[in-house]
Amino acid sequence: MSDTNLLRFRAAVAGALAQLEARRQEVNDLNVFPVADGDTGDNMVLTLRAVLDELDRLQGSDDTRTIDEIGREEIVQSVARAALLGARGNSGVILSQLIRGAAEELVSRPGQLIDASLIGAALANAAERAYASVREPAEGTILTVAREMAHAIMADVAHSEERGRLGPATEAQAQDLAIAHTLERAVEAGQRSVKRGPELLAALREAGVVDAGGHALTVIFAGVVAALRGDEPPALDHYAPAKISHPQHSSSTYRFCTNFAVTGQGLAPSRFAEDLEALGDSVLVVGDSTTLKVHIHTDEPERAMALFEGAGEVSHLDVADMRVQVAERDERIAPSSGGPNSAGRSRVRCGALAVVNGDGLRSMLTELGVHTIDGGPTLNPSTAELLAGIHEVVAEEVVVLPSSPNVVMAAERAAELSDKLVVVVGATSQQAALVAAVALTGEQSARENALSMESSLVALRTGSVAEAARDDPAGRFRRGEAVGFVGEEMTAWGEPLLTLRAVLEQLAPDAELISVLAGEQAPVALSELEGIMDGHVELELRHGGQPAYWCLLAAE
Image (cartoon, rainbow, N blue to C red; front, side):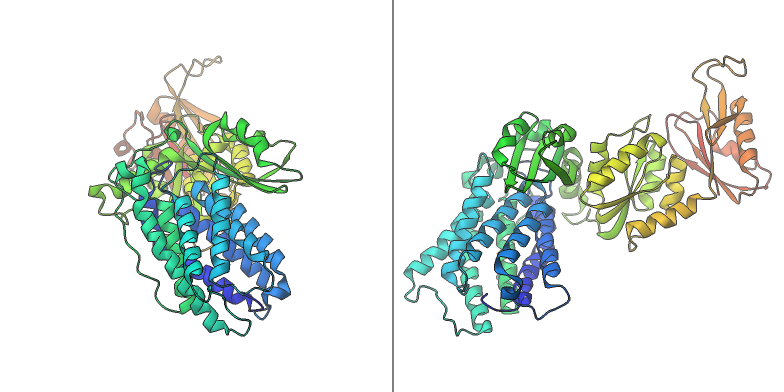
């Protein structure tokens, strides 16, 4: 925008983001291609937010800096890289390429005011770059919508007597209104293209929807128009969720939507694409010689990352479990669910993820606002499963509660790789995870929450009672009898109720409350424990449902 303040550019991006945020769930519920994972709106929002954050970084605290003072090329390169690193999923990566393509065209014309002619050229270059990023472009998608929006602007310019050009003396407000007029024409063309999508793509036609990414692109442009005019956005159609939601793509055979960045020197996207396709599908590798963004649907995220060993540093890793995403989307849009927004979850600054095994424990953690993943009887999820769980937490920062010493290393690795800020808390038992979860405060940072959680664990003592898996070589107990532990030390054995009482008595000194979590196969009913401590300490009796232990105990 010539020598104008960067704040005008930021306002346009903010307007686009605000409109997309407002219709984010609607976009998610349209998502059936290439996989019905219901995250297109989320992914495109994250990409735009990364751009906005980068503009804030460039502007700093000085609101008077102009575009030319910062440097057009620096802005373009910084914004394009931010979009690339912030992109998730097919839709986010494609949007990042649209942003890069438009930015490249804008910076190639120094001194020219942004007018209809330049907008048309920028959008045409954006569409060309986006098409080039996809190995098998599908018509009827966001790609088609971007191309037809560009064609509409170029056609208007060709038939305009003034060729849509603005003079150097054009005031900022007049320029904004002229750009808004041009973009509104693009929005109209985009809406027509979106409606034609089902004619071009069978997956959309069968599901009874339009393309989610294409619709989102018109929402983005409508938001820019609203920001430029300081008014309401152009009217856009609303679309109902898909009539069917099963995956339309061969990625129904793959579990993890995996995204990561690679930074290095001499990188070439084509060098890695074939090897990635041997591990999965929906492969996108885009970027330049120093930064690549990789997207793949695979069962083996670690192997996909390993392909880049020696080529560059892997970062900004995000792994989403598409089976979970599809199931959540199905539940959200099911007729009995009360509509597409009934399952919406509010985003907070910090959330928590806990590894768990037991339906009662899972319910208790969920009630406390903690997202859970099933660690199985051995509480030993993979790094990929932990990363997928971190992705599912609706927060920008996450604390992880491992629930087992065996999980700590994998959780720390996931924290290093994740593109979210992740802190691992030393809750190495399911009882400890439950106690730590009580301290979770969504408005605090992950580090602040971790400190509060660690403090709550300082005085915690844990115990457990389980079934002996084999006879004791020392003859103390036989297979099938009870064995009791305080911490990791075996301290009691024999008949179940007596063993449980012995462990409780060892935990009781200095305790105000002991939580008793009954397991799935517990031979002692919770009702039998009422009054067992003769009022010396309060017992909180709950069903934990864990299969491996008859009882889990936490003394606070």
